[in-house]
Image (cartoon, rainbow, N blue to C red):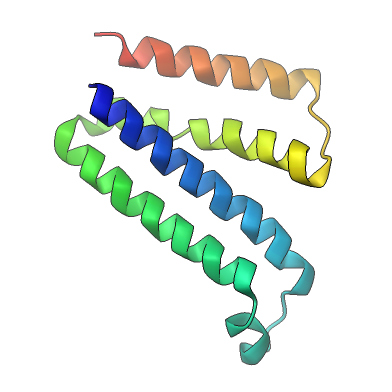
Length: 112
């Protein structure tokens, strides 16, 4: 189970990093193909999302979907922290409560 938890943490960190890069890419996004293929945060974000999916699929080989899928909510925790650190987004009381509930849910699901 330790390996699965490590894989899920890696996967969710990769997914959250992808989302953070998508936020950065959104500044320069357009429907111009040349701008899309030269938008490195967009490309790197997509690569991280794909990598996160591959790590998640490998974790599915080791554990049940009904246990793992709720754990992907950790991506929201990492994305919120990243948005706060990098983009100075506010962390409200509601967000703190939500993060606490996500962490509590992950702990409850992983207890066997």
